[in-house]
Image (cartoon, rainbow, N blue to C red; front, side, top):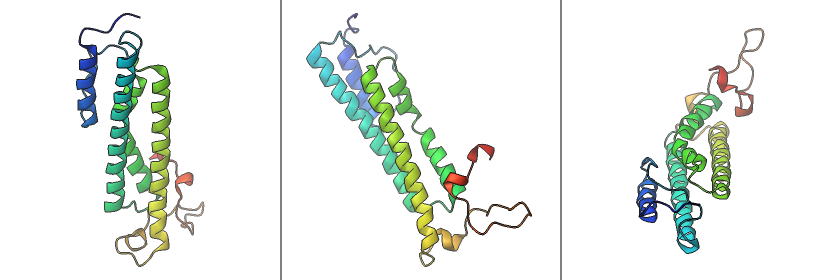
Length: 173
């Protein structure tokens, strides 16, 4: 392995501080985190990298949670749209996990974390709109606002129950 550019650790630390704050600086000029830094420095850098990534994930989860509380989805279509919009904001984290600068074992862990976070968000959104179905006394919940449109039956009549996220195919919207 070739040594990282002079000041490589300092460049990474600066980049990670900006990334942790929610910025998405370019990775130009950063060397790969493999070999060349020395075992102690590399371990410290990997620790900082993991911490910055986890902080960005936490920020994403907090923002989505705040949005769900402020305006719960009114039904499965709204929940799917909210999830889609939220997952687009994971792009900087996916780019980092896909970067050839990140060691493969850490990249795999990052992708695993992102999968778990998306699954958790999907569950939270599903539970959020289902809670509104069960509570017709909570102001502003789906029971008062009305649900996403009911699915038409083959005869053109409305089905007797709302669509659930597992029965909604958002690709055709």
